[in-house]
Amino acid sequence: MARRKREKRIARRKGETDLELLGRAAAVYVERCDLTGCWNWRGKIGKNGYGRIRIDKQDVLVHRFFCATLNGEFPADFQVDHLCRNRACVAPAHLEAVTHTVNWLRSDSVVRRKLDQVVCLHGHPLSGPNLYVDKRGHRGCKECNRRRTAEYQHRRKSA
Image: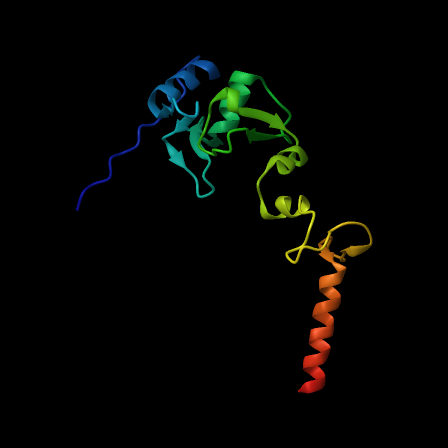
């Protein structure tokens, strides 16, 4: 059985600044992609796809560390948005500190895409009198809802 190669550790040297530490970490763990311009993190990657590094006995998200060090500090409640949509990227030009709302509005999540929907799956408009919003905030098509209700009632009567 092959032994796993031990990952190099990046420990802060005495009197070392964040920028110097960042430079050493980048030299070891960053791989630049000429095609996309991304700086891909090749060190530890968490389950969610974001790079992690241990600094001063604390696990740190690499993209937050790179953004704060190279682009300037930002409030703790801000999130770092990957403009390139690559979670392993640490290129400062691809990282921007934004609020949660802005980060979510820029995302490509299912919920976010549904907000952009202007017609339902059957082609009815999702606006004006044909749009309803339920208690949970989910949008729906009144015409499709009427059709589903009529079909359900017909099945109940015939059963």
